[in-house]
Image (cartoon, rainbow, N blue to C red; front, side):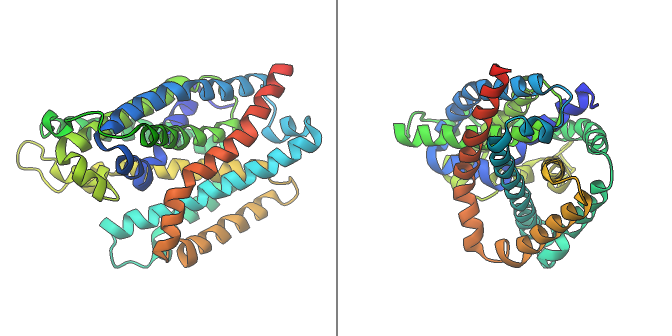
Length: 339
């Protein structure tokens, strides 16, 4: 049985995880300074979908996700396969973009397979542990991540210039709708992973995670402006280079960026645990380890090795995740209403 703070921290990390290297860059390319409004509108429109997941967990009670799906017979089996694909997709994405981020800014000359190897070894270790271990680790990392986030927001606030945001309403309606869709998909769809818990209160952590994303977006636009923000793949990291503490402590961007690394790690570990939950009981751990190793090899050997593959993930991930969300969650929500 997981505790409230553990569930809160997991959902907070999941809300933010897909914006490293994807969310900020993708949305800024579409709507520039109007992205602030798309984040706000997207947050409000996303709450009903979070409430749907809350309702499913409320009716699921202490059942495992697999047992809950078995009640739906054939349809439950189809949903189980779709959710398994969803979990593997998220784990693959997290491995690829973790490699991309670290190889771009920190370990430039390090082979890709070595960058994500420590994460994979931790996932394998967690595979032999109980689910509660991940949630306890998440609860321990939450105050560290929140502290680093606050440090970055406070440290960067002095460099913000409101004039960089003007003029507003420069994007067309179609681009704005697409931008809102991207935000909703990237911030809400990872909450599917919360179905392996019994948590029924996902709105508050979602709103907190969204608030930090909106603040970070405001600082990106107010510091480097919408034109430069559209050019960078990791604008959220670029602005961290501006931070100076006490006017002489510099070059701390890698320390502060640990908050993003923590987000991705928890998101990666939760995706892994989600996959494990959906596997058959017989030799579950070994099947789980085999899937982790296969996805790890695919990530550094094929997906992360070629830039064209990264571009495909970059543009199609919000569409694919939203599609899988709409194929599964509404059906589970209808079942919870009927029950």
